[in-house]
Length: 158
Image (cartoon, rainbow, N blue to C red):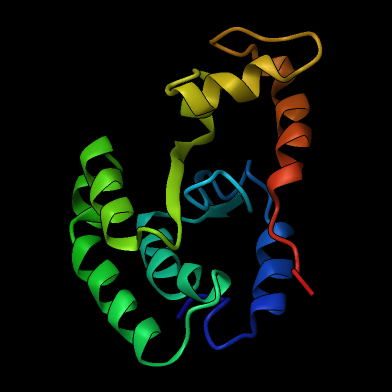
């Protein structure tokens, strides 16, 4: 059982926002199709991330009842290979198709892949630093990057 299971969304957000990316090294960034409501959460591993993505993210976006159950089940089926095969663009696109129009995965990966600027989203985050960074981000600037990423920490919408 994961520490966030069985908790209200506000409790989950507080728990996840307090996680240190140097300990929880796998991250997930979600938002809506129009780019609003971006949330970044850090995980202990792929199993936790997959369960969270299927169980919590639909709730964050306001889904409940039978609609929630249908999407949760579809996401769990789509994410079945995540633990073994890991994150990939193909899997991300499959999840996004399943979750459309409620939410999408904007980025997922490790702190190291983020520092390497592995995608356009990761490079945007590096470029937003002052002064702007180009990949790979030097290790001494990691804390600066983590400070910048706090803007995406989950927050209670109420």
